[in-house]
Image (cartoon, rainbow, N blue to C red; front, top):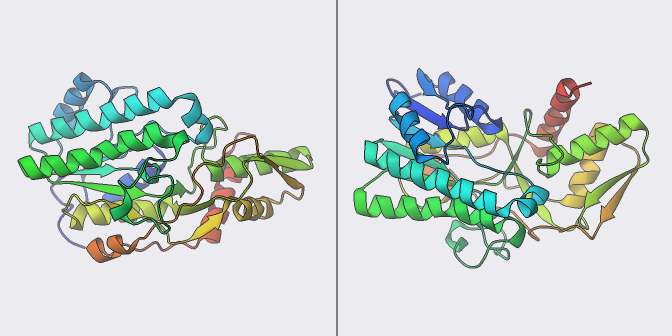
Length: 314
């Protein structure tokens, strides 16, 4: 433990969300006493005036920018313009005003969707500009990637200390299980449990099951973010991942088993697969700030299923 956390004022945008709650909890465990979480009802971070008002209220030394307008493939296809505009305006204006106010450090959270569609696996941070992202989530991925450009240019011109982290897809207790906007793990958990309870004999899954994904447990993601907040002070992007790659087919079968769904998985190949493969090179995070994921994937998945079983509305 160090005294980095003591006496500093922290502002965590998105701090009431899935990842944000865990980040805020870990901040307090580390000794941070002043943690400001702007609520969406009070501050629309797309609006520069709301950002100014939030910064005046929070007066932060450190900003951890987790807030984002996000969703799965379906949501990305339906709302590309909103995902682009909201994420771009939120991030760019927040970092600009943070620099203007003399904030000590800005931690920007990017997305694995920023990587080119056909990035060599495992994805290295050095390959992030070598092509266009996968089409279904390109507007979101590119909007978030502008924070990397901003971080690097503000450091170069103004000496502003901002960092840019690239977490892979997150999962865990407290995830978003709304079928209209959830990502693949909570979507499949909900589908399998509802089918099991209704006695249905099949669950339809998008795509053909061939793409691979890497997932990071939410507790691990929060740990990586806080290690970077304390120890990393460069604008080179850094991946946060688990180092474990799994196909969507194997993932669906594992979730069916853990939820007790005994029916058939039917693959709807009229629906998009998304990016063909996703797995990260996580060596930079280990080298720069000693981060390595700790939670085994099946254990994390079991925890997520258990949480949903206990917390879903009956």
